[in-house]
Length: 390
Ligand code: COA
Image 1 (cartoon, rainbow, N blue to C red):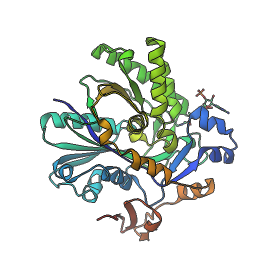
Image 2: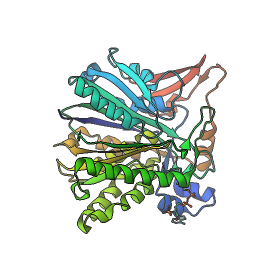
Image 3: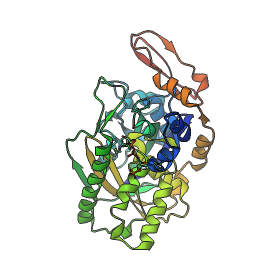
Image 4: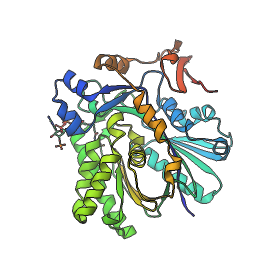
């Protein structure tokens, strides 16, 4: 049975900081952030956008009435969940008008969570061919003001509808994955911001890639030349390139040029959003599909997922005929074009704003947020969401 991605949605908040401005304010040469790290703009989430609303907004743009009825499994991958117990999947369920006869839960394994969800969804569809699964990666990456990871923050979500006979990307049968208990990046339950051993995380990202790439080659007998493009988890856009370069010698110059050119396109959205952890790999896929004209149906796209702690996985998919019809190219172009730049000072203020944690009431300025679904406030420790369209 053919199983894979049938629809893809994306959402990111309407505010951003320019990386040149951030570099100047941090007394760093802007070239380090824009060339060395490879980031141009960083999405900033106001209090009215949290991982729940981001996820719901990303899913809202792709679901029709049939999907709402047929989805019987909702999986949210995140590492910035808003509750130790209640899942984001249950929060978004009513906001999206989904059929109550569904399973809903959240998955955590750093940036790998959405990939775990995608592979679970594939298994679910294999057992229940008529159902559909909603898989979402949603995150707000926080390393802290003036930290070395600050330039790699971001906010956003990617939603994917998984079904049989998918119209975007059919997932191929082979897999390669690897797990090791390492401390390259983590966030203890008492910490608002992540802890990271940056250099170690870079090394492990590449080391895991090399392992799963070799495993995948052995399992699939596919050569690098047979890939149109490889999409990478992008904590920052230079990272995937470093990994890609380690295998380029496996093919000739024409293939190398194609892979490098497609890599450039696959980072278009990511360099303007920043790291969105679980959704970064899928944002990179969306970026490739929506910004590269002329990708042929039948083309093979490799996918490398890495979640610190750590789990790495390589898998691949085949582009489906007329996949463009399933995309929202103009809508996403409008989303980027309508964003508002804020100063570094404004970003710092937003970064430090928190919801009350003592049960008191807060009403947020939802009219200042153009999103359809917003966090309107909190009362008695209960978050209040509004879908302006309902
Ligand atoms: N112009 C162009 N490039 C410049 C530059 C300039 N003026 N100044 C520095 N650079 C380059 C460096 O040469 C380096 O390139 P390289 O990695 O190709 O060698 C790059 O910019 C980054 O510089 P570096 O000194 O290594 O940055 P850093 O010590 O501030 O840390 C990270 C970078 C990525 C480790 C840090 O941002 C971080 O911890 N991020 C979060 C963790 C993460 O994303 N991990 C990825 C795996 S999950």
